[in-house]
Length: 94
Length: 369
Image 1: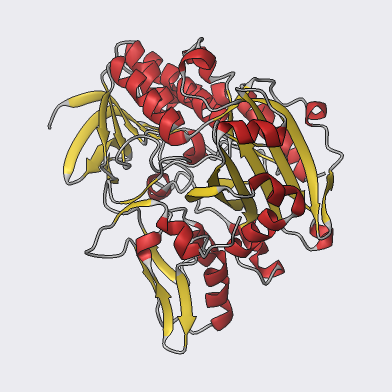
Image 2: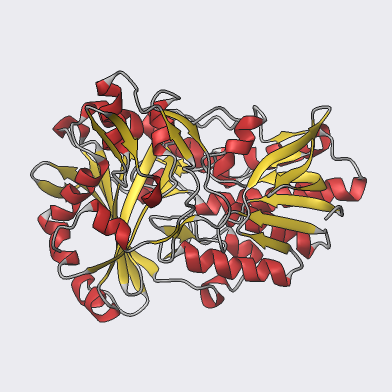
């Protein structure tokens, strides 16, 4: 199989995006780069990115697994809820 | 709605559906609230279901449920830097509960189960998240869903592995990275004929292939592959705390597994049709927490009931059994009118003397040897 990006993988999924707010809240200015890197690498959907301006989380492609919350223990991820009912990802094949 | 139900079930996965179905069959008024648009749409399996426990509810499960393939070949390999080799693990040796097993798509299986539950009389509410519980003087009396209050004699929490409501009650601790794995998989379409050809299968036959990462060789993820009817599920399972032992990301570890020559040739020219991820506890301890409180029971993943030793990952059969046993306890309480902790405690005893506890202990003993 040809290698495709994680963003393209998410592109085959069905999402019903709740536009008003993210169901996950992060500390965008979390000071410890090593801690941020752990969260960046653990997210299966590769939705966390970090640069000089801080941490970014793109909630639109979230698979709602909870991995970032469990790893972070309240550090980078400060609040984690499920999206509003019927929103978010809807798996069809899994 | 200000009607009071006999039971409210939070979560329409297999544990919640089993509980709701079994209670409704005994005439209880049951409402089930599921956050997904339909039951199964938020659920992910590797994976296969061992059908022995759901067959207690549906004796003709193998003939009537929407199943992909019956597992006819189980392979346990070791994943090292140089490739895949035999792991020397004989799953028969450990004495896990014997069962037929089938690959399944949860979107299809849970939707089917929801239809059976509805036909049995369960009121199904789908697409609504339960945000909060109604607790009075230490007793769980109901739920808040989308701003509406619903009350019942008992609330069964079948909310899945993340267990936010059970955590809010203080019944379970937050998941720890040292005992929680993340499973990430691709569903890849190949077509039924090509799967049969590449895996040497007849129609309806299926393969489960577990590839255990050799940590001594720096390989911290486990790989897995399951054949569905016309797709294969290929993924990795990774203990979250091991993120400090590798420089790679989860998506990179999955690509590493897919790139192994033994795997790559099987999925060559396949078409990605879904990308999914889900948490699963590792059975590092066989301790079962307290599964009951005043007016409340925990079932399935929310109760931490999973048998996961890496080479075996069983949750769905434990979920169904726990849901059924919870239903039996509620039916007894309903008959006696006593929903106190003391009355619901019979559920805990039932779980601890069932195959659930036995299989969890086998996995914990293996991981701690």
